[in-house]
Amino acid sequence: MDDISSILKEKGLKVTPQRLAIINMLKNTKEHPSAETIYKTLSSDFPTMSLATVYKTLEMLKNIGLVQELNVGEGSFRYDANVNSHPHLICYGCNRVDDLDYSALDNLIGEVSKYTDYLLKDQKLYFYGYCPDCKKKMTN
Amino acid sequence: MDDISSILKEKGLKVTPQRLAIINMLKNTKEHPSAETIYKTLSSDFPTMSLATVYKTLEMLKNIGLVQELNVGEGSFRYDANVNSHPHLICYGCNRVDDLDYSALDNLIGEVSKYTDYLLKDQKLYFYGYCPDCKKKMTN
DNA sequence: ATAATTGCAAACCCTTTGCAACATC
DNA sequence: GATGTTGCAAAGGGTTTGCAATTAT
Image (cartoon, rainbow over the protein chains, first blue to last red):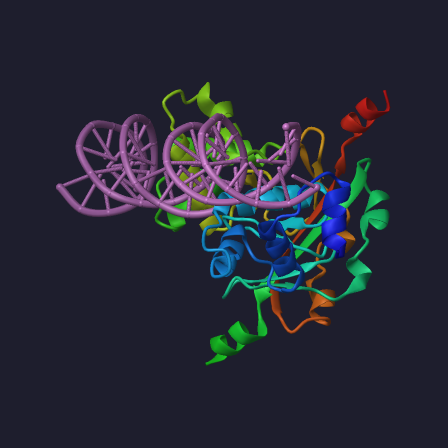
């Protein structure tokens, strides 16, 4: 029994093939997929799975802290199995979303707390521009 | 003729009472209202104005750079007449959105660019937690 | 056997669009 | 008078919900 199965069982949640597939897909990608993308990607293995199941599963994964939701400014959310606070890069050209490896920004809350009376709990940092591929295309 | 009227005319856009009301409301609030909130607030002065007009006006204001759109993770967007990149504080308790005055974060792009091959153009920084009011309520 | 989950369809909410009437220039 | 804008209603897109059938425990 792997990690995920035990976590689900501990919480009294059932371990279904659909759930495992969704979690595993998120753990094995760096693409920060939307619900739609997850749905389409898994359709070949789970032809009868519905989008509603994807949404319900993502909601559950959020609630138990296994997934975080990103609002990059599109119409839809994106999902990340890396639940640590880490900054994201978003490409205006192709809508790609990448992680930014720059740990100095991973925990600004302490610093920012000096400048506000809010009790801070979380942060989301988004940097927008053009990814290396789209940058190249622009100079052509 | 004030600033806004001249800007609109320069761009070949018509100056209507609805547009002026929306822009002025945004300029005179720190509340980062949603389209719905703008619509409801202005309903007393413009009883026949439709939500569609609010959305069309906000779209136009975005396009000419007079307003920025915030995606704080709710179902709807919020709007800010301060178009400078500045960090925002969002309250989990009451969904309030405040500006964070901490100019050290206003321009992280230069620093962040050292750690990525993206050509960066913009940033959006969101800090989540509990506002002073909601903080008080929690300790009761 | 019990209780949770799936999958379908319908509902929901926010936002956008088409178009005739209207206001601005 | 020409053109852009408004306001209405309908459509659109993403997400959520209700519920009977199914599956995990």
